[in-house]
Image: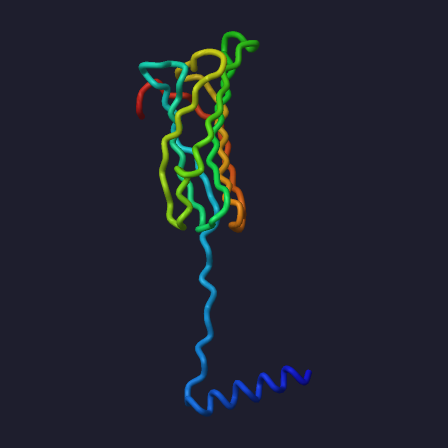
Length: 149
């Protein structure tokens, strides 16, 4: 209680000397960490690769950050055949500066070639340790396109 009174008296005295109260600093809201999946296009030259469009945003932080995209696709004619792959973007290539970014991530199938116009499950995660929230994810079912829409 005594410290509060001393602080109040000191603040009042300083205001009286300058004639101006110290401005209150408003905390600027930091942008949220978000990620959204776009289209997935099979590479026409190498059918074992798919290019996935990803839009992400993360606030400025000096700690570890990553962007990961995974694709899984069952063969519609044979449920025992599953193509899957995952790709992690290097930390230096993930820009966390508080602005939105677009990136096309290349995912290589670890098993078989991707099947055009067949459903696949796409998942992505962006993490930015030290930011709030520290991670965001998106997932969707989409057809892998053979040509650009």
